[in-house]
Image 1 (cartoon, rainbow, N blue to C red):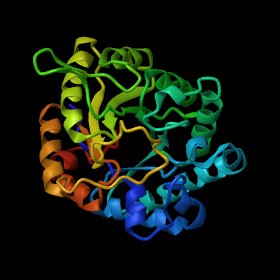
Image 2: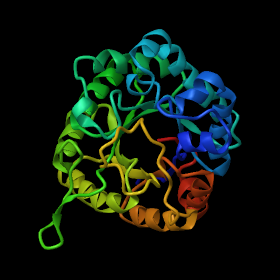
Image 3: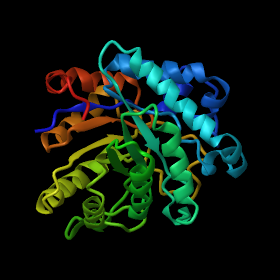
Length: 318
């Protein structure tokens, strides 16, 4: 039986909250470039709230946010710096903290049609090689199509120093279907839960957890239920979990993810979010945390409610 792991929350909005340089299109990468002390402080804030695994702050160190020229000139150095800062914060923690290396969408969050399978292998190889000295595991974040995971898994095999990989998929704000016939759960690319399970089977040598992230919490519950059932039917013993955002129902509007700064939902207080997460845990999820607009207080409430479950596994980091 897997113990419970508490992740951190949304780095970008936490950086903004504590006064770090922050804007689009650079998002969280701006602090990494201009004021890295804020990145260390944000990691520390989540750790002190109870996070057991923190994610490196290189989500926006990609062509989509910084442009091809900056990535060519500084991509490896900035990615390396994000790993160093996370490792420093984890090593300074009063409790054991693992560092997960972020493997983000390269060409646009929530925009699977922009994925470039020709350019992606070299870029993901650069990210993995730059972070490998500092991380304990990998998390492929905000995936919108299964073919992203295929490329990432190969980069981790080649350059990941044997560390395990968690695959986190982003869900659309609405599913097709209706109440009579049931919702058809699929990613924005059209890839289904069956496609995800098949990919996990292909990459079981490196993938040992499947999550949903940067999605409305209301969309995650049904997806987790279907995922858990189909993983079990396929005989795949991998962990599941989720870390939702507090964005409004707006991801499917016609603008790019690096062009606006979403306002958070007022209803997702720390207690309200924890109530939703409790349902995921009851259904078998063992990795929980927050994404954009989920702050240290959200992580503290998760840690408070699940202290006994996390304590049972505190001697290990898997």
